[in-house]
Every structure is written in C-alpha cells, then in structure tokens.
Amino acid sequence: MAEIAEDGGGGHGKGGKKRAKKQSTRIDMTPMVDLAFLLLTFFVLTSTFSKPKSMELSLPADPPPGSPPPPEVKNGVTFLLTKDDRIFYYVGQFYTAGNEKGMPPTELKETNFGPDGLHKLLMEQNKWANDEIKKLEAQVKSKTLADTTFKRLAMEATADKNAITVLVKTDDQATYKNAIDMLDELKICNVGKRVLGVEMMASEYTLLQEKIK
Image 1 (spheres, rainbow, N blue to C red):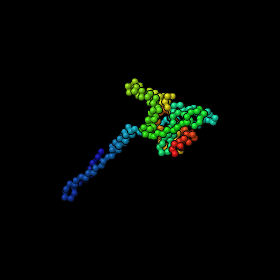
Image 2: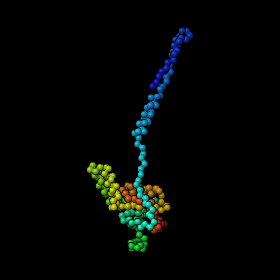
Image 3: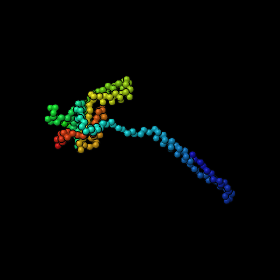
Image 4: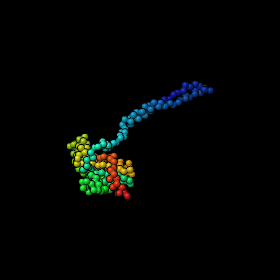
C-alpha cells in the first residue's frame, strides 16, 4: 500500500503568496512480502519431489566351510560381462570338457545390448513369466483385477519355478555401465530371479578369455 505524506507548510512567502504543500510517497512492502511467502509455501506443498528408485537384487552369501556344492541351475541363464561392451552367455549348467557326467562341454554364445540381442534373448527365455503377466494385465484392463492384486500376482509369476533365473558375472575388465544396463534390461523383461555378485569360476574365465582373444 502506498501512503502520501503531506508536509506541513501552508505559510505565506514573500509578497503574500501562499506556498504549495510538499508531498512525499512511501510504499509499504509488507503485503508484498506476505504474498511472496504465501506463494513460496504453496509451491513447496504442491511440488512433487523425486523419490529414490531401487531395484531388488540378490547377492549370494559365502557358503560355510565344508558345505555341499550348490545345486545345478536347471532353468537359468548365466551372463559373462567383459571389455568392449561384449556379453557372453550359456543356458543351464556349466560343464567342462571330460566332466564326470559325460555331458558335452559348455559353449559360450555372444549377444549384445541391442533390441535384437539381449532384449530378444531374455524375452524368449522368460516367455512363461511374460505370458502370465500379459494375462494379468488384460484382467486389469477389463477391471476384473485390482492393481494391488496384480502387483502381487506378477511378483509371484516372476518368482515361479517356471520363470528363469539369471546369473550375472563380470571379469576385471567389465564396466559398471554394462552391469547397470544388464540390470535395467532384466527389469524390463520381468526377470524376477536375478543374482549379481557371483564370482566367475576358473573354467568360465578360461573359456571367456579364449573367446575374446
């Protein structure tokens, strides 16, 4: 608000002329400050702050001494990450040449981070879980299934024995970016059983080095 302060004056100058009154303007900034604080409070209360996003990750614990060997990976895919953004993988259990079970030795296959590479491979390997989630999404769309129930059933589908288990192993030349890209793709392809941090076996490392020569 502005106020106009009038100077006293009003006296007569020389020659009997009446002197004009002097006026000064003063602006009161208090309402402006109050409005600024009200607007600031409004924007703070209505703003949406970015929430930290996390991803569930399974890190295996070191087995106690004398424990039996881990069970075979029957429905799983193991990825080996190395330098130059290269990805090698094999399906199922790893077998060395001349193993006791007489199984053929494992051969590494190579893929890439492109849509026709890693994404296509994971969608094919995890087809059962993806089909189950599509059925649930159709029920949500038809409003026969609640969102909360959908989330629970989707998590159960990705954890089912028919869904794949993915193990991600890296050598000393792999980058953090490749590991993050791998985890992002696993999330997109609805792979619920994913394990990172497993140490690469000596036989896997030897076979990998032969591939990247």
